[in-house]
Image (cartoon, rainbow, N blue to C red; front, side):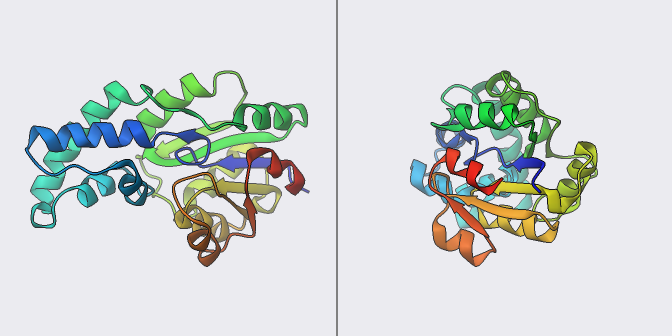
Length: 215
């Protein structure tokens, strides 16, 4: 029986691609480097902002020194703009309300830096109660390592088998399977159906409210 759901944040609950892209493009423009469009940025996200910075830089500048300096600047710019255009996907508010009515425990696990994850969710998810919200940083490894998801399951007081992990990327599906949770992929996010299936999605959702059928 499903008693809890852990959501990925970017590309699952929140459409953040424009703020991420605009912020990184500002950093690139400051260095007179080529910028990228929103669809390209969808292929850059999923493994944290440092990975995004590395992928956005020209190949010849993907050294530790350049990645580090541009990452620091990106974090500052994005911190100032992380909720400028970011909002919940259509149907997510209704889904969260229905899950709350059913007393399903809710949590968030993101590869976005924890301080940014907390800042975004404090604004976007203020209307619902979440058991635990965790971003990247500290002692817990990034997804697809299962340690964070299992840590959250303990905070929720649930067994992994009682939890659905919902995400939009192969990394999320790997995280779900690595931690023994039910892997549910969403088709409105940043990646495609093939990536989700190749990485172990057990169920695919075309719209948020379809998740209610998995309870």
